[in-house]
Length: 141
Image 1: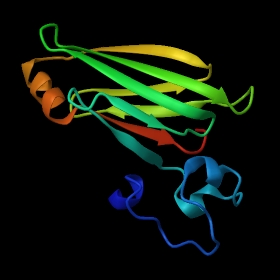
Image 2 (image 1 turned 90 degrees about the vertical axis):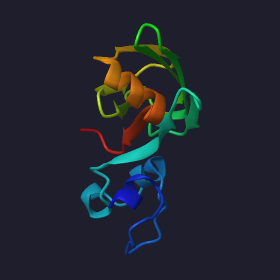
Image 3 (image 1 turned 180 degrees about the horizontal axis):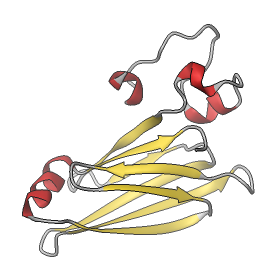
């Protein structure tokens, strides 16, 4: 299951269905049959590797850029969305690490700034080592 969530391995499907979220939205009507109720791993963003870019369900292009301020124990994540496919769609994310859990629903094109204050010095060590992991929910909740 973990390999599937990180897009390293796909479950065998009865039909020839692409493994990306956006492609599956136009596929069979039962998302549970393909485990689409689980979020898809979109990447890890760290202070050393602070940029991430991918295609979402609603937006054709999503970029994430992280700035980590070690002295202030804070993280700023700028998410830029563009190429909205429909007026009524949105992309719903889980952004997390050991110390931070945040969900965000992006409905508009443009830049969106998220700021996180790390709770303690141990969280700062985790941020430097592991950064943040991002997951995109493939189906609306």
